[in-house]
Image 1 (cartoon, rainbow over the protein chains, first blue to last red):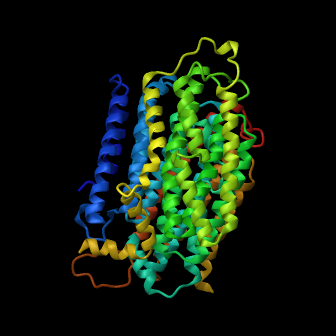
Image 2 (tube, each protein chain N blue to C red; image 1 turned 90 degrees about the horizontal axis):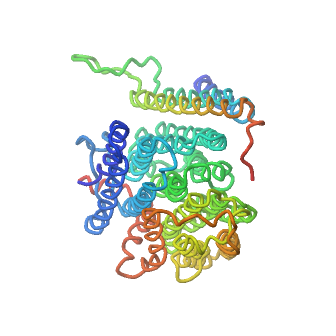
Length: 495
Length: 115
């Protein structure tokens, strides 16, 4: 059974790095990269397991749920695990060279692995309170990582993020307390079973609002987004890539859709709210992004906007819409982490990320330039890159469901995204090279390698829709479509 | 009405904490407000498992089964208190570093990030 490894490997690595990292040179580098590589291998193996067994349930300590805690591997879990493992592996390769700028590299790796353990735990767990504990592990590690540079701005951003994040956690805990008082159980499948036996009431809607506020804050949907443009740019670039690439999706979108679709049972009312929040995020954030001059801050606003696409797609509730939303979730985690790694590379080489100061870097930093071009075209939705396909699916799904207005929002958002990334291309890479940048060099080999692999995935990502590879996405979509069928699947696997 | 009074008190405590986080200017007071929110939620969670005239949920040999309080919320709240401690410790540590950098606890003066 492979499920416990997703938590054990990063947690064990974090423990060992914190003890031996300072004494043994390069211990953190080696163990963190081995850990993330093995997680990637195990998560790819989980795809095969899901295609054979559909659903696997691991009983912790042999206690049978609903009394014991269980870990569940289904299509959505496997999809999220592959996304998280892929990005975290490439980011940890990148960090080998990039994190040389900071002191205490082993502490960085400790927090990095703790955050990864929290995220993997959220994805695999089948118990609601367990989800809360892992959510807090990932959150606390990310608060500390945002403040990692301990400069004035970073501390300020981390403080803001920590306050907002803790309030969000309190909302989630309150939701869990209410749900426990209503159903007397904490196992997700069991909660779903008890709820479906009870008549629908206002309490479930109230709980849904609690979760929406809590997870929406973690996902930075627009009314709750204020912390993200401060927190994500302040972190080291590799952590920005992790936060924007996967953390907001795991803590926010994944947890939200799992609770709403599979536990509470989705209704048209929730879907309408999700669609509205998604469309609002994607328009408001992209407009705010247009006027930014700090490269990382611009990217952070685009994260909010792209999360809007994901939530809009999933909120449509149709098979095509959910497919588009989840596919965009994967694509966004790839190209947004690539863009943040690019911004880190520019910062590493040129020492600034203000677009007014940079210029003409294309000749000196060809790898960064080309990978950034690929990522920019992906995020703007230019064919044949992966972002094009997922946005196209979302727009078609909007029109198919009859929501022409949301479809138009998605198109406008895409055009404005293109505009703001043309600005990045022009000011960072185009134009004359400034005198003070004459002597800078392209970034070290590990950073280039990681960026090149991500760019390759951006180019090839569209192939995931081919019939051979589609079951990977389709099995994740089926889990969300089955809704309350989740409990039958889990209890069926227990027998 | 009497039955719900403790829940209403919990809710008032939660609102006091939220007000404190949103309206105070001193960052230490914001951290205290955060603590109040956590206590309110923890208190609510314990009350969920409370039963009038219930006894401690320990099953000894030969014990007659009688009304007990629900032990699960107590275990969960214990976990949540520990998590709350970790968050408070981290935020206070950040607040101390902020004071070193900015020389003030006033959030209206800690504003280098904008846009």
